[in-house]
Length: 119
Image (spheres, rainbow, N blue to C red):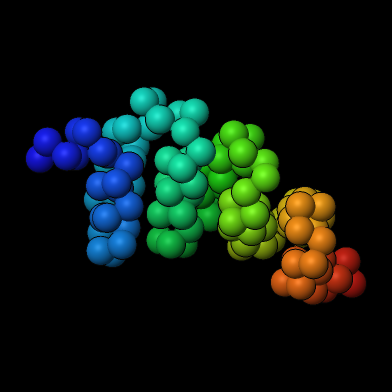
């Protein structure tokens, strides 16, 4: 039990890996004030909500993670997926452009951007 308090993010990741999403979300909510400026924590929480198909709750976590590190392709990719799930085409397009600015040869972002712009 000591490691839970010493390494709460590690415990959070373990719960998610084990499929204990509800427990992970509850733990995360209890830790949120302590880790509100931690990119990894925000990314983990956004991922947990996205896994349980709650894109609306996932979005603020990915937005905060993006504010803390706007060069993380994985965060921007998941943020794009959340916008798509919420049918927010314009925001998804912005995310695709951000990915391509960081990684110009990202074929997935390029394909999605073309697809979205042709809708």
